[in-house]
Each structure stands twice: as structure tokens, then as C-alpha cells.
Length: 171
Image 1 (cartoon, rainbow, N blue to C red):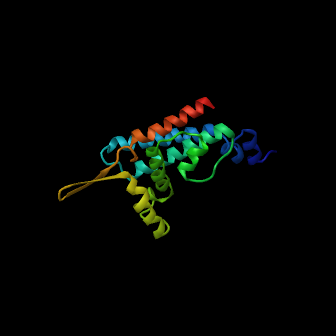
Image 2 (cartoon, one colour; image 1 turned 120 degrees about the vertical axis):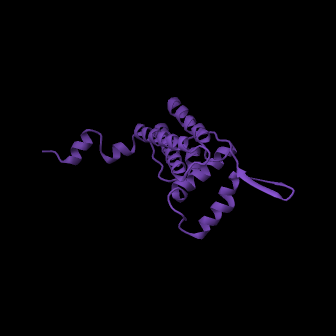
Image 3 (cartoon, rainbow, N blue to C red; image 1 turned 60 degrees about the vertical axis):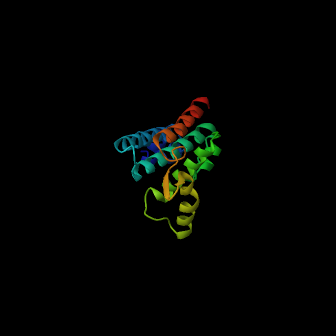
């Protein structure tokens, strides 16, 4: 009699098979992107952290699925700019900024009130998050608003997801 593990292996539902199956990664990406879209639609003007987190996870899954589809190798890390490079995506500087904030969202910003230490906190607010702000002064009036070209909006995320879909089709 075969063990449960042997049966899973025969059905190609063992750890190694599932881990290397780009279609599973891409399908999970599509599911998380749908959830991100639903959350965004509820509160389009000020998306909540669950949107950022689901968009970040969808993006990570898309990028890892794209890389797996291209070369069969799973990259085990959360830095989305590096994953996009590994997936051979051509990105604008705005998209790089978007991936930087989504990386931090996946790692901590979308899940916890603080990262693991103050250095990460300071780098996030002083460098990464600052790229997504437009500061304007008119006389004594100071205004800070989101840079809609780099901020995690559904439109900006979809551009990267669509680029992954294109790469997947062309691989």
C-alpha cells in the first residue's frame, strides 16, 4: 500500500511539484489581484491597508510565477524590484517606486504597525514613502498629496500585473 506522500507525488500534488508549478503561482496572483480590486472599489479615494497588502501579495505572486514560467526557478525573497528584474520586466522609475513600497507592504507595512527595528522604519518614511508624496507651497500654505504616478492605486498595480501576463504568454 502506498503512503499518502507517495500518492500525492503520483498525482503531482507533492511539495516539489506544486512549488515549481508556475500556473499555481499565477492563479494565486490572479485571485489576490481580484481581492485587491474588490477592496479598492469599496473605498477608491483612500484604499485601506488590506488593499495594499493584497496588491503587494498579488504582485509578488505574479513576479514569482513569471520567473518560474520563464526558467523553472523559484526565487525565495520579497523584494519586488529584484523580482521584476529577474522576470526581465522593463519598468519606469515610477513603477520601481511602486514596487519599493509594495515590497515594504508585503514584508511589514501591510501587516504590522511597525517593522522589526527603527532603522527600517526611518528608511521607509524618509526614503521609500517620501517618493510617493508631492509637496507644494503657495505662500503660507503647504500641501502634501499622493503622487498618483507612483502610489499603489489599482491602475498602477494593473500595469505591472498586465506586464507579467504578457511575459507569461510570450515565454
